[in-house]
Length: 284
Ligand code: GUN
Image (cartoon, rainbow, N blue to C red; front, side, top):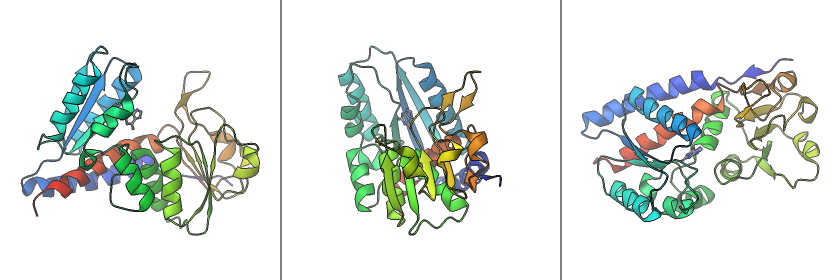
């Protein structure tokens, strides 16, 4: 068996064109959705990410502003910028790119963002909303994974999902989203005793560790669905995920590639969240 690919580029194109349509309709009612992206310092990976986010906004007809500051920016100055953006009616979503320089308390900055504009879904209020099933913004990467499962018509009810990784940005919210769809969820991490024994039980596996070959073919039940959130480089410097793609694709029923899988979906869901934030704020 060779697994079917879940194509994150194709799904992103479809979802982004829906965002563009809804953005046009909102503009006709007098509101242009706007995202502010704040970058502090000159982390090269972050610079690429924020450029891609701003570009995706423009392509979907969303207004975006990129605020770039030197690494020496003080925490007080950054908090003042966040407060100004909270009060800016042209801005519906605020994203402060992580990581921040060590002298800035990232959690303090995240908590300063108005929950109504927290399109990253990192604020405590957003996490609480996800946990309790209340309306709020979902973190973009796990949200994108849920859209990928939806795109193949996958019914999670009663299925066993194994999430590898327990970060606040991916693993933990992923587990809550799968649980909300009635899956039985196991969260594995670096202290898990026998990872293979867990993953072999899984109907759905989400690998979100940030390490190559965390999941190999011998760890996957035939027919399982495998979502790869990893973004790593192999020995030749090529982008690869957490999953041994060539091995696992012979066992799984569906698999996401890297690149072209979960990555583009993360930006897509940022656009969706920004549009939603603007729709919620617009006069009826
Ligand atoms: N750094 C890496 N990924 C992300 C993300 O999704 N949002 C923010 N704000 N920073 C990141």
